[in-house]
Length: 231
Image (cartoon, rainbow, N blue to C red; front, side):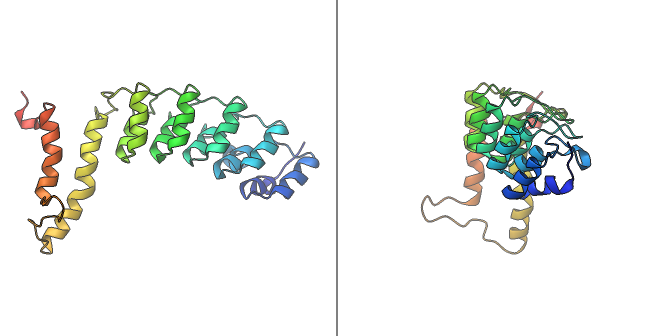
């Protein structure tokens, strides 16, 4: 059994004929290149379903990890490659495998907003409240990227809405912080250049401040307070 970097490259580039040729010549299907990457990892990361099938048929170990603890399933889910993820799970991939920093396939899929992959993983028993080394959960990942469907699906499957990360941030705190962090600077720039602060839209006649207060009112309606108001 042998292999070389060209075998891994052929798998990463979806060069099916080359992959078949390497395998027919006895290429080591689980041979590891730099940082422990294997042919299945490279093909899975790029979403090359047929190449993954060929490698698995040739005996590739489905959960063989690289030096960072990444498996083909984690990489496929991070990229939103549903067909590859489904294939790997069907071949016995661990839906709850954890890499060296505590990342799981569901954490990566939620961050990317990959709806179908998230549903697939949940159906296959992925831990909905998994945490990485910073205490971040799939729900927090989806919230920070405003992936509404994923947020709703995770909550339906029992995601802990009040789970706190390492610095005590919850999903709701992260959502509010995301708005403040990403739009404060933008709005400041517009105002500094003379943007009309009381402009109204043509449908609901709302001003920018009205739009902001929709969020404030929602938080207030649920008992939200500013830190200065808390004892």
